[in-house]
Image 1 (cartoon, rainbow, N blue to C red):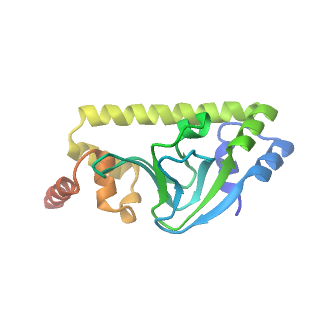
Image 2 (image 1 turned 180 degrees about the horizontal axis):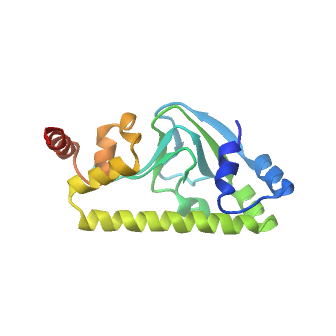
Length: 193
């Protein structure tokens, strides 16, 4: 599996020399996933930091009543996984599965630590990625607190115009913090306009 898309994404934030690029490529583990295949499971320590090369993954939390709460959809170019589990070795509270047939690039924890130690430039890259992720999550919380469900859905469609084609309605509803039935009502109302 090619690391072209990952390297292109990295180049938006830092410039790698040949040695840094070669080392990164050497530690990446390519993996092909079938739809509904899990890469991360609740109560297991997350062993890899996951970069989506193709397809779509979903990270979610399952509550005591067996309701899934979608934390993130990750498409090509995105990183995903339970960062707390990966960083601290704690059992994950999330599951991550492929919503479509997908191709991912994995960085094992030991290799990630070595990458950051050997090439401090990657510290800057991942700091930028984590900052952007935190900003995105904070904005999502603010939208959930201040926007109506219909406004959140319209924002979702604008921000992620292709996700609705392959993400089941129940997962989109969970991501928006509403029931699938209420999302159906919103869709009908929007179609009537």
